[in-house]
Length: 281
Length: 294
Image (cartoon, rainbow over all chains, first blue to last red; front, side):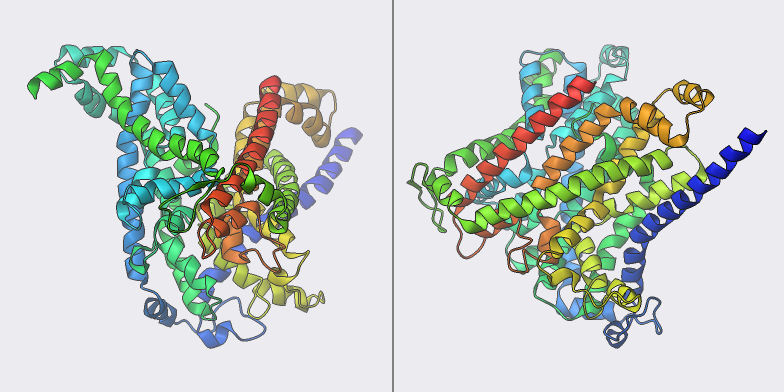
């Protein structure tokens, strides 16, 4: 009996500080996000008052009007939607086709091409950004949507993920469909792709999140104001040593909101994609 | 047309149709640029980009005599030296505390993962403002606690720590979740046996959890190292290398030498190649540890 008691006292000594630390870390994550959200609705005067407030004294929407006046944020949003939307649509088709081929077909050069695909996963983007810019420039795609989108479509990690998903589907399904007279692409598109829906959703979420939040590539490959994406345009806006804090907060909130909604509904897929994607199979 | 369709519809042939788009894109936008990075590093490419002059090893010689490049390597090393150990060990400890699947832990995991959906721009605005010396909420909170007014974003020697902290803030959620998945796969009977032997939580962590998840540990080390050595976007949106170059990472410097008014693509490529070799060296080292532990 006595022994049990000492354990429970030890447990209290152990658990309370641990819970405290976990809560502090959670607050460290949440406080900046919440403060930024609140600040987007404060008046400029309240933002620059010292000491700063946490909860707005007066709610205003003027920052959201201001930001459109300072930068063409609606155009930036449209560009981000195009960039994320088209990249993702093409990425789903291209990467799942390749993943399917590596899972279902035997062909000459399979190992070679697959190893080559894997090898590209080891190449850091930052190392190839300069020549990649030159390639896109020489192809005449500089400062165009195609230049922005096409180089980001094929992703080795996504091919790898789709291959793993397709490997779990029995081959007999393809055989049966073949006997029914479906074309090879028909088998893939109509029969097989719906079987790996969770993997497709994960790919979509990873791709949308990746391109919506992408900063470096749009910065390299676009130059005109009309081509800027939201992440890129906002970064340049605050980079000018801006003192229009309200507009910056409002812009950041607008940029965060769609991903937040996506995260609320598809947290599972985010976690799955981010933690299993990459080198591990 | 029908003939072509029939020809390619044979399973053995259609495989090539299926992999062709990805292979073409990967060659064009990954493999060729990688080869070009090595090639370009031996050339002088002017800003007009219409010709290139072979200069041999000159770019590399110049790089190692360039104080700004050497400084950028130092900054990257300091950043990596703080960011990686704190994140890799911190996430492991946190993961051990929230690995059980209950309501509280699921909520905490969802919160910790939240920064992953924020773009570098959003993170930059958020942290730049909350640590701002004139409008920052945290600056004011610390001041009211008697710590004085700290200028987080503009103090040489301090700002690199702030950048490291923001970077950890951004991605510790992923590391934590990967650890949680690994810990959940450790056989519960091991923990039960240890509990019977009277081992406390800390002993269980050190003698069962840590040894069981070693491959995961090295996997996270490898990916975090590679990520940290390429740090760019967080710096770009917070300090852009300042104050006085104390937060200018190697990629930040490469970026400014490649895409600004004093653009020199050949020189930037040479520095990229040096960085690539460093990243590859460390990745291979970590990978071998990971495979050995597996």
